[in-house]
Image (cartoon, rainbow, N blue to C red; front, side, top):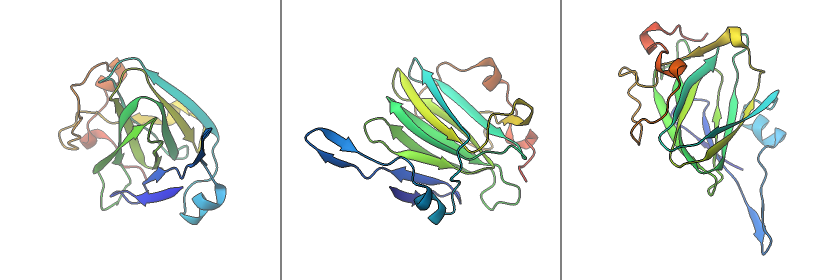
Length: 181
């Protein structure tokens, strides 16, 4: 795997190193030694899949608070998404900053989201499917969220906003979200 640091400290884009022949290819999605060498979580306790039927769908921006704050490893298995993270770490020099990676099934790229970040995405195709690895199991009492359209964060979504849950529409702006310690 190739690990490329993103502008927000601790976040990475991961590209597969495919070994192929006439049958197709083989690639490693996770290697405990490689993740440890980059100081990344190597313990995954939960794996989830997310399917969105139509392009333009936005899901997010979600996170979990300590002591259940989790790191995520996200890969697009079908279609394409504009994947976004926002730094919510207390005292971080990039607090409130965002960055994005386009994830495609064809390209195989992944994003590593450290603890203390909100995460969300917009589908760029119909029938987009994501695979998520989480370092902690989901804990409803520790869940939090950030308004996807907060002008103080300024995420520039590539498509017109399509389907959005009522929950995501009602999440608070950054000014009302307590930083993650």
